[in-house]
Image (cartoon, rainbow, N blue to C red; front, side, top):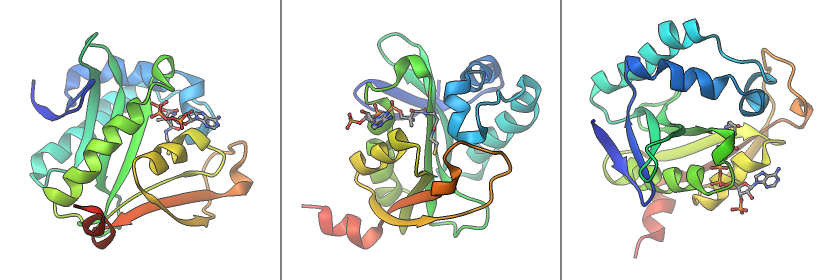
Length: 187
Ligand SMILES: CC(C)(COP(=O)(O)OP(=O)(O)OC[C@H]1O[C@@H](n2cnc3c(N)ncnc32)[C@H](O)[C@@H]1OP(=O)(O)O)[C@@H](O)C(=O)NCCC(=O)NCCS
């Protein structure tokens, strides 16, 4: 297993083709997909043929960014995924942080733990000049994670969503941290 990052309770490892059922089960839960598309499961074929190949393709670029499966070290259970990669259209040194956790593991600090490990890696090893994350204003758990991971409020903005999602009228929120802000925090 190629370990990308290890935290107190988690291993972040590369995705493989064999992860299709884990990723599909995560996206099959309407509670998990609520703020992504209104609660619609991602079809397994789409995960196998589109999502997983795209996630795995990041590993070939060698820039250190990408998507990772998060595994609980104690139980070996798949608890979800993290991404840290420039969004399409973003500069190569401005990665976006994201996470999706199985509902049975919510509220135990896993999303925060992974984020707290990925952000320093972005600045110290991957040459990021800014790390940011966005979510819907109504997705409180998600922006709480951003706050707890040390990202700072940047803006509320409005963007068109392909799906009707409850609360979308409140818009989206962006949190971020620049390299200068990161450097200023270091002892
Ligand atoms: C967002 C998500 C990743 C959080 O994962 P998690 O492992 O439960 O997060 P953590 O336990 O590290 O932290 C969650 C925080 O939000 C808080 N929280 C959760 N639901 C909340 C709510 N409805 N209102 C207020 N706070 C809430 C928790 O209490 C916790 O904060 P605290 O430690 O100050 O008490 C998880 O809910 C998830 O996967 N959701 C579905 C996918 C998703 O929305 N991803 C983000 C898309 S941008």
